[in-house]
Every structure is written in C-alpha cells, then in structure tokens.
Image (cartoon, rainbow over all chains, first blue to last red):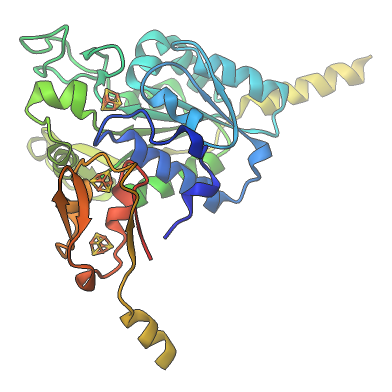
Length: 271
Length: 69
Ligand code: SF4
Ligand code: SF4
Ligand code: SF4
C-alpha cells in the first residue's frame, strides 16, 4: 500500500473528476513519482492552466499555482526564471497546451527551458462540453463534430520533439507504473521535458465514441499502445491505429536558465 | 525465511473507502484473480483469499478508494 494521504489535500476529496476519468490515475502516478524523487516539497512548484487536468494542483499538498487558460507555461517560465533552483512541473491538457497555449508550448520547447510538462491528452475538451481539440482523431465525434471530426490531429509528442524539447515521452494510465517512471525521468532531466499522458475521458469523449464505460476506455488504451522498442519493428500497416509509448527523445542541449544565469553573471562582472 | 513465508501467506487486507468510490469498475475488470465485484454501484471485496497483492487495483483506481496491504 502506498500512503497517498501524506501528499493530498484530503479536505478536497472526493475529487471533482468523473467516475473512471484517467486524471485521478495520473495524479497517483505523479504523487508516487514525487515520493520516489525525494525532492523536498518546498523545492517544487506545480503550475496548471484551465481544464479538467488543470484541477490537479488543487489536490496535492505542495506549492501550486492555478493560472489562466493556455498560460500555464508562461507562468511556469516566470517562476523558473525567478528561482532556477525550483523544480517546476506544468500540468496541462491537450486543449490548454496545444490550442489556446499552442504557441507557448512550442516556444518553451524551442528555448529548452528546464520545465517538466505533464500533458494529459484525452483527445477532447472535457470540462467545457466535449468540443474538438487539436488531438481529436479524424473521424471521432465531438459536440462540435457530431458527424465526425474532419481535421487531422496534432501528434503532440512529435510537435515537442520538432520544436526542440530535450526530453519527450508518452505514457498512459493503463500502464500506471510505467507512467510513474516516465514522470521521474522527465523531472530529473535538465531541459524542457514533456510527458504526453493518454488519459481517458469517458464523459465527453467515450460517450460520443462508443466507449462510454470507463473499462472500455482502459481496454482501448491497453490495445492501442505499443512500447517504443516493439514499435521500431512494426511495419507501417501494423502501426495503423496504434501509438508508441515510452521515451521518444532524450538528448542533452543548452538549457535556457543556465545561459540566462551566465549572462547575468557576465553583466555583473562588467560593472 | 520461514517468517517471510508466513508473512506472504497472510491474507491480503483490501480496504475500500466507499465514500470516495465512484463505481467505475476499473479495479473489478482488471483484477487478474477476480477478487472484486460490484454491488449497489460500488466495489465489494468478494474473495480476498484469492488476492495475490499484485496491487493493480490500487494502482489504477482513479479515486484513491481501494488499498491493498
Ligand atoms: S469531463 Fe472527461 S476529463 Fe473531465 S473529469 Fe469528466 S471524464 Fe475527466
Ligand atoms: S491486489 Fe491484485 S489480486 Fe488483489 S484484489 Fe487487487 S487486483 Fe486483485
Ligand atoms: S477503481 Fe476505485 S472508484 Fe473505481 S470501482 Fe474500484 S474502488 Fe471504486
């Protein structure tokens, strides 16, 4: 048994998420990761935007900041620059980070600032009523796409990689233990780190796409995810309808707060 | 060693916080030993003696409602 009570704000429970929502499973993996990392809670700040996943900071007993829609990364950037010693974790969703906050997402990756972004991907806007998000797969239904979504979806892990992130991983809540390990690695990594987390939304997504039951959504996650090592051996046809999970990018690059600190030091020396 | 073995044989203690359980059935569906059941929209520990303490129910419960010791 893991003692989650040490880390949660118990008075806010039961939490607000719907029955079978994956966000609670992510929260637990995150808590176990924090425990494993052994970082003092005073040295950690969790920042979120708006959306179902962005409710996460309200449930954990660490320094938290609940900000505006799409702007979690800018707030987190400010926190990190003000005190680069802090471990700053951004909790956001597919709508928050890749639609409203899409520019912030790619430019923080380009800058390679040392933030950890936990990007819950539930393929839809849950909180506001099931609208299409940038990750809603083509053909899937949403309240704004009652006949099926016509648009191709963003692959948000590939997007982070292309924009310059130094660590990109994808996990899912069916494989909760693996997810915990990915979060640990992402926090330890110096540089912009993203963990895309596939987390089911039975209410807004499942109901419209023949997976209303939470168990159906978990089975779907189980069946569509393929570990990266196996993925490499699959043919393009076999990859159809599947997603790879595990570490996708892990490279060392120049990090933003370090160059910024150096600049400050050199300017001070010039005086 | 003998002590370890007897500890391993002790039946698992599975606790459910019914006020937090939202009845999603995830723990029931994915328990490899069929230990859990649904009853009145909440989980019920039906066969604790079959539990292997794999912890999967605790890991995947979204509501912090089930623990295994
Ligand atoms: S609407 Fe969807 S994402 Fe939001 S709490 Fe409910 S199940 Fe979770
Ligand atoms: S610990 Fe494993 S075997 Fe025991 S009840 Fe939970 S899922 Fe079933
Ligand atoms: S997984 Fe948790 S919330 Fe869902 S039925 Fe089991 S104990 Fe209840």
